[in-house]
Length: 245
Image 1: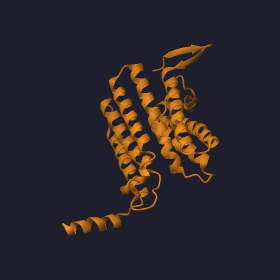
Image 2: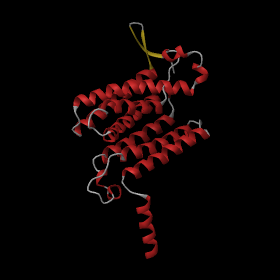
Image 3: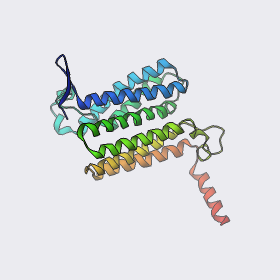
Image 4: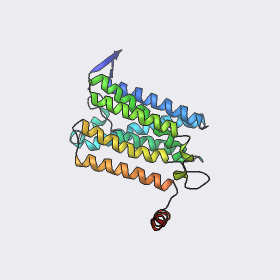
């Protein structure tokens, strides 16, 4: 959708571009609020927002161009023609947000997953706004479904962000649990969300299914690793319980 919905002094503001900006601003607000509640340094929070926005746009655009080589091959100047050739890849954007966050905190004593756990909240909240806006702009019920799913996921992660470290199965009898619970499960949820998105929009392919499966399994593996559990220990427990029965 490239039709301008607003014009200010001959500068056109396009629907998807405006929606992307509003989604990012809302997601940034959620991230800032939660990071502030976690007593992170305000300057570092703001720096991470700016740097993540920059790399999110860059990698999102690069990923989009790679997936649409027919449009950009031998016409690389089109990468900069956002009005005529708009588009960002959502997973490229997320990767860019992660890169920007890492670059911002890499020289500090901060732990990346402590921050990325919270950044995920901003991503899901912003995504819910984005899909809601799409539903209004193009009048498609499928986007309403996706918006509600992202909103419910965001609410769930928001509520357990402070509590998941107390879960016995995740803490695994340790005095404290590592961060990464939300990052891991969010990757799995992204896989499921993307799969549903492809299915309800009739745009499913085996490549999309493979990518969804990789995200889902990879997220669960990350949670398992961060929980501190080991396969050997769990196998011993399973075998021990089996003998009792």
